Length: 525
Image 1 (cartoon, rainbow, N blue to C red):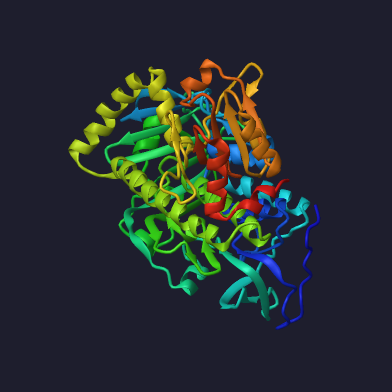
Image 2: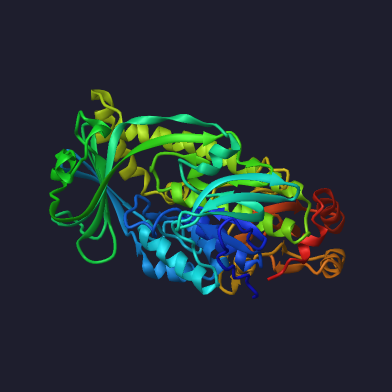
């Protein structure tokens, strides 16, 4: 694949034109750059930091993210670098109350039926290495200053490591620059929401004493809690909890300032603190994910509590949702109106996620006798009993893994048959020689037919150079909600665009005509 290698210009000299300027080299920006370069789109990615982060709060990589990583051929590498969490244990006032097994919890839902623990700092280094292999380097100590639109271009001013200013022109601008996003401020988008009262900490430690040592633990003691996540070498853990201090943000804190009740209840003995940091938790969503040729992704567009390990994964999903649409438009295979669906789809999910994580986080942190009783008695009892049932385990896995995320109200979603609606993620079915996710490795539109393919749909696929798969009908498809002899038009990101139970060719032609994506179907990789 030919990539555009961009050389650093002299001060105030315009760069060669690029397709997308990406501001921010966290996981969101890095994944956006990887997906775009894989599709032959030229990118430039800048970040004002000196290097990738050495500390991080994000620990979990969810199944849906790994499914999408398979399209970049990095899923197995990420899994090898991480740790499959066997189980999560709930403790209350020093007593174990419930154990929730996590391995293979989603074996009928995803090719990746587990929760993977991989600290964000390690994760970022892996993504950077992959991007370097693709011929793209992150430009460090390079700060975005401002931008303006001129016709079909974005003209951005940036500051180089030497302190000089530089003009960069691009077709589109992607703000992946975090909660204090300069791109968002330039766009003038609001960031409505609030901040939780508690001051939280994250610490990387060497510790012993907690049993089982290789499993995750969450412990409650009145309004105090601690989350303990093992990863990597033996006795290495990440801790997340609350700081007990009336000074709040007004002073520097150390590990000695953290609340010890929940930690002591676990029997956890800290031998060494490798690093420690504090932070405030916010819940905010911007009012505009797009303004003309500028887009907001990840924490620049939405922030929420760390409950359920959703934040980083949501930013990555933003990047992938936008990447295939940008590629189609840039290559003149779809009208620019396709990009409007990015805000429609991702903003709706961000609001839903903020509400969900807010409820969970409030449950974990709220003070008071009744709340304490619910956390330490009722919730563990319910969790212990409910998780014995397969349907409950599957439901919880679906929620946490982001495999239930759908775009039912998207302008790209049309039709329903059986239990499956357009906008749903394609349900996963595997067994014997069947794996309906194997063809999803390709970043391209494709058609799946479960049952029998009619001659008209075969001819339609040939005329439009459309990849198609026919899966002979079996009982497993019915159990997953498919309807026999139905055609499903799958988007490049694995979501269903069109469900056509009859008149397949007619429905397909009307759909691509309505969206103006006839030429997008030819975008094959």
